[in-house]
Length: 146
Image (cartoon, rainbow, N blue to C red):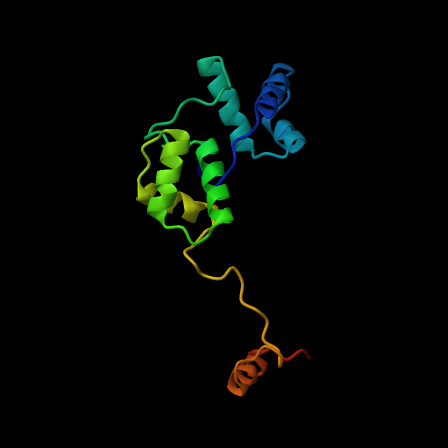
């Protein structure tokens, strides 16, 4: 999906209902808190096609289903040191799909798993500083509040 979410079927129906009741696009956009261009494109689509349902898009269908993604996330959370090959084999046996290791890596990256990097760096204090220079560097970079 692109950068923006699609409107729900309820909002589509509301736009068409307001159009049938002779409301202007400006009134509808203010009422639904959506752009005027979106409201007018919904009305045009309804006039041309007779429906407001989302039409199928071009492009290849996704190999991983939501169930497969959920299973993959559960597998990685259970043991984070597994290789992509072993995760792919586990998913192939569980979902009976032929999934490559690159697909596994791409899906993991999309879920927010980026290799074995730490999720967040610990805050440096006197207790957990490895050596004195590191603490001095952290204090020097800290912004001074006026």
